[in-house]
Image 1 (tube, rainbow, N blue to C red):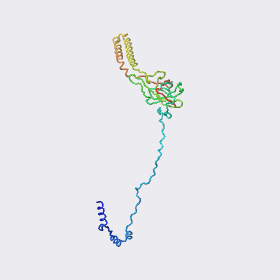
Image 2 (image 1 turned 180 degrees about the horizontal axis):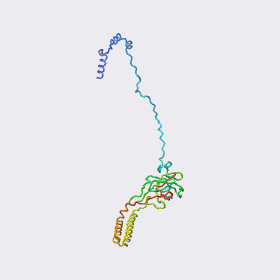
Image 3 (image 1 turned 135 degrees about the vertical axis):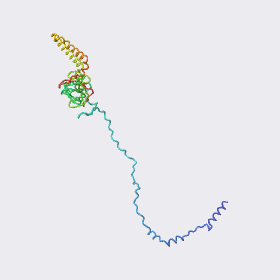
Image 4 (image 1 turned 90 degrees about the vertical axis):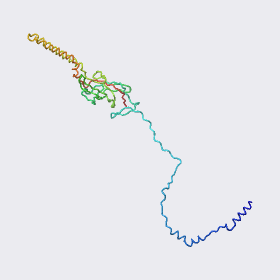
Length: 287
């Protein structure tokens, strides 16, 4: 069966009806009509074009890149203490500074008059009259202090005396001026409470003065009545002065607490060169 099929296929391929014949007559006609060399010369020139900008430049890549150098790391600064208030008063290291302990007291003298005429913000100065010795340092005699007036007023009604409140704000020792926080504890050898230098309060003194005025007036009227009683004519009116004196005395005695409200307290005026005591409320560090 396979042999029959193979014979049939071979006979079909060898048959003339399955032969292919190429027709070259068309190519000959084209060659006679058109000259290929002239055809190429008659074509227009192609426009010139610039090289494409999209072409990416070749880049050299290196497999090993050196990492950028890191910036040097500086250690954290140590905490600094102090507030710059003066030209040579700067922040410093607590561990290397010399400390003047809080609570240290200095005996000083005033360089000017201190009175209730001073206004808030005014400056006064003091000079130490005795050295103070502590560990690693001796604060010599002649050390300067300055203080600022925080509050003041002159004598007021109701017997209130004058007032001066000073806060020590600087110390100059061995050429260094440092800001400090201190107060006055003694003024003119007298102890001060709450840092208030006050004039004498005279309210109760005003009460006593009013009583004394009534009593003195009563005594005058009694003497006057005694003189009138010696005269036969004046004996009739002699009780009038003494009665008047009694009324005035009673009024002054009963009204003295009210009348004393119009009395003023004492002035405060401490002369220059008076002795004071200064106490530090905070540590002071010297470099």
